[in-house]
Image (tube, rainbow, N blue to C red):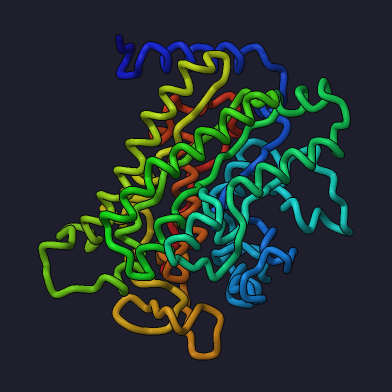
Length: 389
């Protein structure tokens, strides 16, 4: 049975969200903290602050021009400025979410208003899964399981008693990723065939679902679970899979069709699993965040959002898409554009602050979440400005 396009379970969950939102007395809405997991799309400084997480001893986002647009210095974020999580925090009246490693200013590791366990390069699957298949993670050995372990360790020292932990988690929103993209990235960009990588998808979804189950057992009531971004529009993929076969590209966007189909397959399976989890946990609010379509509108109608370069990386090592696996952004041989706000792609694999801001706006104000994030939880703010290049 469906109600307004949702399954009955989803519709009930949506009504529950509205009731909870209406009954809360929180200023700016509903949440007192954000707890986050994921990879470089969400990492606000974990990899840069803990050398033990590194595979090769160097963090690409530790050097300029990373961070140049907003922070004016590298913070460990893989962009020129803020990420989706930063815009979500600002919209909910919360400070930027502290990385678990590194703490706040002056070493303050108080996570009262949020904590971020995301690590750039992290995968959903454990490192052993990739080692068995000859796939190398050159960034880190961290998996979602490691991040969940840190979460449990944090709770034991932070809130001390089960009742206080539960109270903290019930008043928090959990951002579950994006996670899983690297499980596919490492395989694809090391030459593994599509058929093999497709077999990873159900396993990745199972790990994400297992983590959500675990978090709900600990008392989490509200989760935002993002899908994957359109990898067929990524400069790194466009460079690696470049072909003279025009049929492999979307004539409107220039993105690679089969890679975007792959991302959509992941997202469809993830949404099916989230429907199952909603049935299993009717009192939890599980919100799907459609990163894919929130981003695709930028590629399909770039001028509507102030972009004049959709596929070429702002910062990179040359070539048709300014993306070179051997010349990374920030290295001596790389170049950086004069106007990052007119570019969607930042460094070949990640997006600019301007793109992340539009994606966040689509999530926070609709229609790219299901069920939608209620407006009572979001501070009133103007739409992102379209800057002249």
